[in-house]
Image (spheres, rainbow, N blue to C red):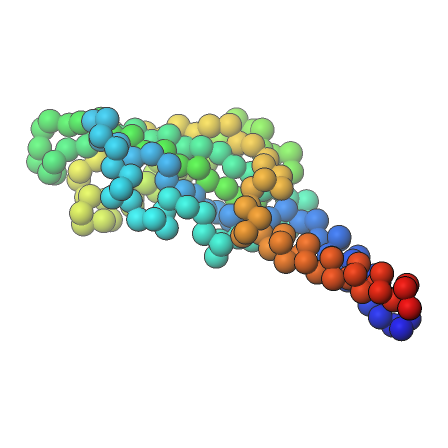
Length: 179
């Protein structure tokens, strides 16, 4: 019986000691897609509009999960040779792990935004359906914020499973103490 008590306390320590931040690692979701004010979110794949459990990762020691918004504007045209354009807007929310204390750097935000802009241009040009259709692409990044425990939803974080393990450990300990 003493072994059961010891194992129960060990489980409580393991569960309670899991304090690394969890994050949708290097992932983003699209929250807005319009051209000339027309909402085109219905055309966006569902997997691009919701966080995916498969992208959840633990941030390493000394790292935190950060989140920021990216607002992208571009001029959209009907074909590569079309002269007339219509204003397009895409908005994303993105997350990733990074060292504590670096989330408030303007240089970091500008660097991240420049990468976003270039990668988006590359992606649009690589896709046969959108190549040449978007010009004057510009990205603006919002404030980089450490989001703590609110980064990952409970259904994706495994927090419910940890709570169940903790409850089981406490219940086992209680039963041991009764008998």
